[in-house]
Length: 326
Image (tube, rainbow, N blue to C red; front, side):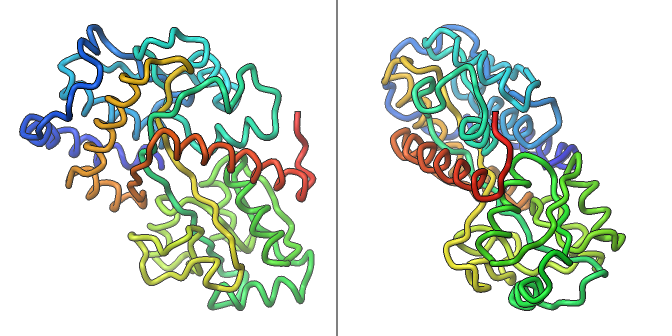
């Protein structure tokens, strides 16, 4: 998700006020909280998906609590600086963190200054975003099944262009599970990777739906499948990669809210109740659908279980693909 969605977010924020005011408040599980402003740390620069998702939820919470929720961008070290800052904050409910799949990938493959399983109490998920498997003009295939068959028959002759981080890991997982031996080339971002695929310098891309969608519509990219367990709401005609023959494949980026470990259970429950209410707003669902994000309601326990599974998953991918870890 990039800066191009900022206008959509602004429109959502402008319409949230009446909905917030009209919505009944859940039972007060933490009387007196919050008594002062809340800080929501975003471990990435402004304008990206984490920042945009955080600002929308922060605006909602500000209206619900009648207290300012301040978004604090703390980028650096692939999100590890801001995440460490949140982990070391007082566990009083006044410092929160937005995390994404990068949280699990960092925790699985790098030496981090916090424990990805023990340093945070998870409040819940905002949503997840599937990736799109697409090809450019340099490869004449019409389906994911045709791509897989061609790639298996021509090991090392197909180039997959991807961004680093989540995009790299999702691509390596697909490369392994599909039985292909594509040459995976890492770019400095998702857009440069797409440009080379559209220009014919590379063959395949597995990138975010929001970045790929405009080029699918223009015909510059041929979309073959999506990466989720189920078909994407924004592209229901596309099969999943699993449907295309790679059984069990799933790789979604996701966004979730966490607090430092030790935050009072009543505060966590109150924030989870508000997060659940936010995800059921028609405005939220409409905006998420337009940007290729699937809203998802989870409990703190469910989110904790997911983090454990994701750490194991991406650690295994690093080993399989011989991705250097620190």
